[in-house]
Image (cartoon, helix red, strand yellow):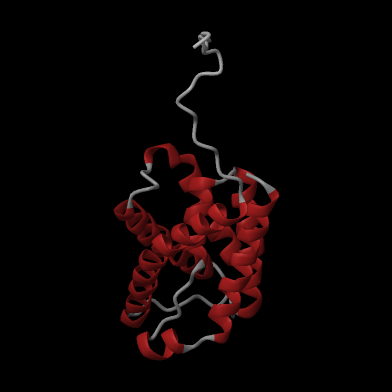
Amino acid sequence: MNRLETIAILLAAWLAVAFEVSFNGFRNTLGAQISLLPALMVYVALSSSLPSVALLAIVGGMAQDSFSANPLGVTTLALTLTGFLLHHQRDLVLRDQLYAQVMTGFLASSLVPACVILALMNTSSPVPLTWRLLGQWLVMAAGGAVATPLVFRLFALVNRLFTYQALPESHYRETRQIKRTRY
């Protein structure tokens, strides 16, 4: 992983949190705000190194918790757990397949809110478990399932635009012998 990809990941995390904070369209129409950080965590866990997973979890989680009513660090813990689990099993995931991206995004986008709720249940003011909360959880999971392939496509475009592409090999060998004749 190069520095440009790390900067792009952190910039995407910052933009995802800024989008969630400033755009209330999903919250008003669907009743829940779709979180883009789990989709971004799926990409980073399947495509990058473990320090990048930790860096995204810390920066993205702290940024999201600073704008929400959650205690500071709750989302960081949930993103770290999700990212480490995905990174540990990344050899088993077909990361280039669309259905695998959708299903992994669905699982990550449902695991992160579940971990946050589980952590909030152990605080002094626990979250009441209602049918509305279940509906919001399903909307967030479905939104993450849709957003994950888009994140993969976006970073494929960024990699194609900002990294050197390998040159195609010539069909001539470098050790070929050229016969020269007079005519």
